[in-house]
Image (cartoon, rainbow, N blue to C red; front, side, top):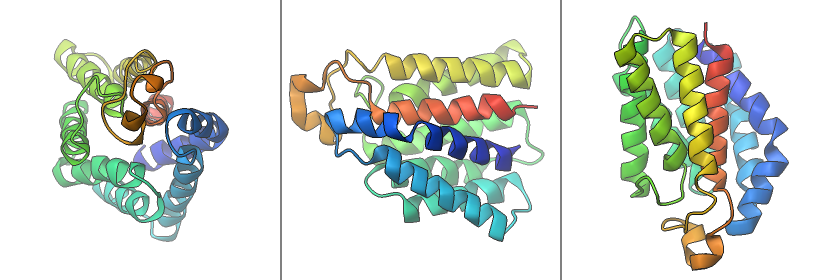
Length: 201
């Protein structure tokens, strides 16, 4: 499932590459879609050339490839999510364990980017997704529905960045002119969660 997650994420980002780049052109440096597409191509290559033996290896390999291959801030930020997840994910993998590891990954991004919900960053999609997973675990929801709920929360979180004024990253330099644009990092984070929902068992 973990390999399939990154393969589907690569497919979705490639499909939406131009949209992500347009979003970044409005409030960033117009390369988010291109960079992330290239990075996920490298992730797929790494997972093919060095087949992982465990979910932890998938996460670690993917995170490392994203850090090395994706330009700008998004590579280190996404890489930190997956590498941190790989550090704490327990085997055998359960929904509760995945949720806890994902929460740790989001905390790592918040720490690295010095960002919090409401700053108009990828955190605005990742944090709601993490909360949705935690609630799904609490309520005893099945894996597929849990990931669907997380994907919906991420998509809603990304859309909610449109009226926000950016407080972090390059977009923050625009001040009020950043209002009215969806954050590209939040948009791509929503794609990662949509990919997860798509491959859920």
